[in-house]
Image (cartoon, rainbow, N blue to C red; front, top):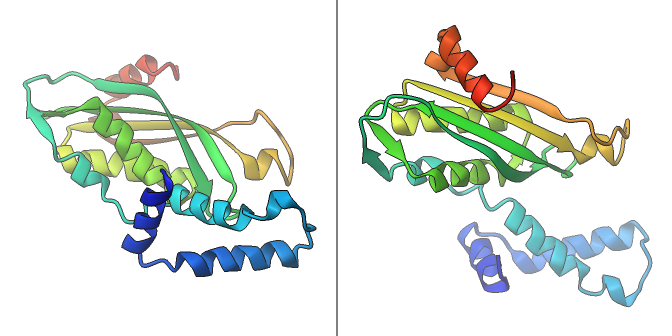
Length: 198
């Protein structure tokens, strides 16, 4: 997002951007991080970063998924290795990784870019990975009336790798399965095999 888009986003969400910048400036001073030229514009940069990282709060991913095409394809559709970045709601530290998304159509398909955008919208909110996984699956199931949906997310969390137990390289894996991908063992195994999880 550029400066104009960030300011527009702040106005849309009724955020007092100058006040946000001032609060971050106070935080930097309270932490006694020192005074140097490098910190002069840091409050503005941090404020704009948060506005960008949390830009999914006011967006509805199901609106994106409404653009559909009638197609009698009734086998799995999978988009693998969708990169994402999100913010852990407990420490406001990033977690990042890949999402694998699949669904069994029921007469309608959606453009692949819309699946990636749905992941992005949910990721750009304060999150926990478990909720993120379920939200993506539920939105695809609802918007497409899909016969089955599968979402698997693998991510590294900086709240665990950069602080706390400090275990870099550890990755968390979560899954959310709906409909036939949950209830039918063959469909579930096919999905997991195709994304490389079995």
